[in-house]
Length: 308
Image (cartoon, rainbow, N blue to C red; front, side, top):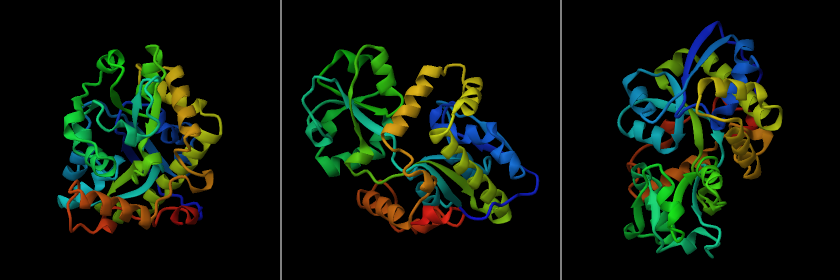
């Protein structure tokens, strides 16, 4: 880790991309344990929800620092003329999954070709073309996912899009323990849960951004490898729909699937991964060609271990 940076008293409103959940646990842990305060930061976490549109708010200048759910968001903002940069990531693996009923004989993503897939509109515009290019999926497989698992639960020979720590838990509560295929384990190159900062804010507040990144990385390390109870208490306070059981399930899923990578490299990003993502997705016309991918992120605030 770089030498600890202490900012002058700085207030930050950090906007997440969904209601408070374990996928935001490192930030809540940093808040609960005082890691932000120790570095001179006054941080308020503003939870998102179904109508959250952090990219639009970032472009309009209504947010200065927020979660970017995936690599598409900063790249699309840069392509649209907005100036933002991802400065760290929560997850080395994107938590997107496909899942099937336990008695379906498929053992990998490629074997799901031809099966009906319940998938959201946003997914059709992002990772669906990658599945088509990589595994030969066809548009005839698409079934609209309306965020209810009921159609999938009663149609055993179908595939369900989901998030590693959400849909499998809901399915289990309904009596179906699914087989899960994590996109990242099938070659999907994206990060997830990145911290995205407006470039104009970053240039004027480098010490503040450095302090926020350092505290957030420490929060994630403590949340996953230490006692997550302090962060969980804040999550439950911010989201009255959350339960301790779902939080515990999500944390275990993150651990079992090594979602954050090695402890000493938490938060890290690399030029190579960003380039791989951009090259693959621009070749599929999911992101604009001609964008300088390095405009969408910076490694300068990361510890040396995270730059490897």
